[in-house]
Length: 73
Image 1 (cartoon, rainbow, N blue to C red):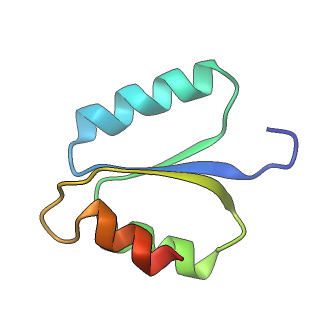
Image 2: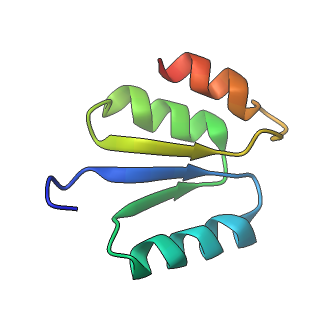
């Protein structure tokens, strides 16, 4: 991406974030992956301008994707 912003991918399953990351990077995107939604939220709060898109799993044990998205607004 020309502006160096990244895509955030959050899913509690490592295999899923790995596959999504591999495909997005193959298409030229820069990607950060997280299997812990609370860590992803902290990273977003610390760097709110770093990410242009967040792909979030709806069902995660600590914090679901809908709640996470609301906290990122």
